[in-house]
Length: 375
Image (tube, rainbow, N blue to C red):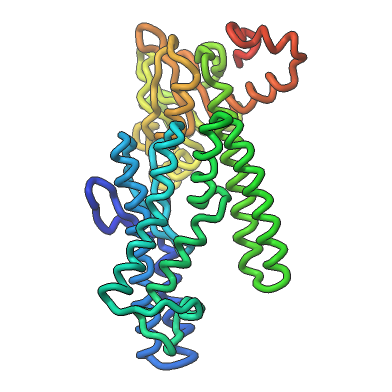
């Protein structure tokens, strides 16, 4: 994630802090200082740091459970709105997803129990109301906030853990795709409810509602794309007409190609047509600013492009798109030469075309799907 600083690595997972989180801490200090004293401001900052340590432990609850099922997590990022653990994939086995999702809130419950049993904290719901509420001790506020985090994350709406728990429970009865549709619909209903409550009481809930609604829609869309890609040969749903660049080309020639084609991502290939990587529009423009138009493509930032063979399935290419967060997956022939590209837009267009076709024609798209080749 851009604008993030690496602060260390825990058990193989890189921990990052987004720059906005540091700005959030500065804002907390300034706001508390203006309403109280320096001691109050530092108390608020320390509380927020401890709170986000609990959030980090919550995320590592997901991470360690996912790792038990063979799902690696390259990094976790702390944001002002919470933590985000980047799992390479979400298991479609309901039992595994259930355990991974529930692990985070259970960590918060465990922290609460620990603070009460060992630290002597008293649970009062009002203790979680404010960051600088000096009526309650810091340990009381931490205990109350952890309990709140556990409850809030169990709201049955994506991207909260409760949405994934709900999907896991439904998937054991109705299948993964249908369970996602139902869970997403429930999540959107919850978003409307939060938005309505926000209009009445707290405007912040409106922003949370928008976030939840978009996340639920995105989750349903991604699962639909993944389901549509199953069993389809990657060669039947790839872009075959595209422009490539070579490392020796000058950047001004690459710019002309950009203007003429409108491509956003350009595969970089060697003299034999084998893929070297991919150069994005932003990296191309940045390289021109830094090195000038006479510099070569090799001087720009060439991102790694995942590669699959032409005999693999579209589902494998789609998984790579998600796991590597790549703009495109390259398709190579038996000799390793680049012959096609698969992007998220490619798969989305395939789904839209499949849905638009009459039922009789749709049945013919399953095995061959020759009409879905782009290029």
